[in-house]
Image (tube, rainbow over all chains, first blue to last red; front, side, top):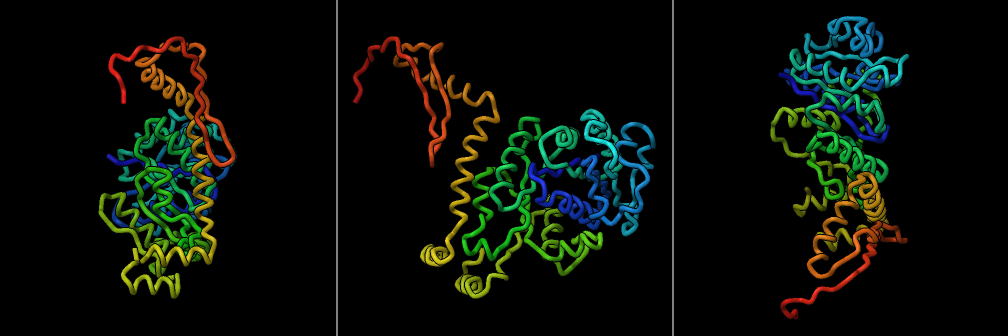
Length: 266
Length: 92
């Protein structure tokens, strides 16, 4: 039986779609059978980040409303051998085209065929969010070290718990270690302290992300990317492996080197 | 040693994260209190449970609210007291 994981954040633009694409790809790389669902109806995006935009025939609404069979709606990622699939969002409908009950039923069906079902939630706390979380066994909350994103993450955590999705786990995205070292960006401990949730992983700010989105190739496929490595580690943690957090102290120049010299590196 | 080092370091750069954390702390006090409609009710029930050990109060006339001050959040409770119980044992 597979596991349904929803990726949420409340605030837009913090990297939900990038996170979903990369965790899905990394889980497939690790030998799992994975399906990604873009639940952002009307604002389809996961397809372009995955580089699958030209392959879409049917979408989520076609599947839930019975226009096509489930199997027809699943777009196979040809870079993987029958292990990674995408169910795209409908672009011409709105969020009410799918109900939470339909999503739950869809997830139940997919759980029989896949190891992991990752749902990319839309921003906000309205119907689209309710749809996205309704079939989920577990929730991941993505935030960035910004006051607005952390505030929204707090709200989302409250809503998840109220909906019975207990123990959501946190992914801190776009951490800039140079700013953290200067005291101009909240660090990991600050955010964990404020949000009081379990930390699943930290992804550094990385220019490779921009390049990989341009190309439609998830950054986990790039061995040189630190963000890619962070996402691969998170995927392994999802599978239950214990992997320590990456150290991001390399970029901080003299101060970082001094810290490490004296053994203070975290 | 590390603390001294980072303090000196932070002074130079302003440490705006402390401002962010403080602002976030205050805003979350209000977010969390208003998001759950039961929040203030739960506090009210607990307060009543404690106070009735010492005095008889007018629960109908009790008011409780969370207010914003400039740099703090204040929980205000106005509790009309009808009668104070005589303590069976002396305190202090």
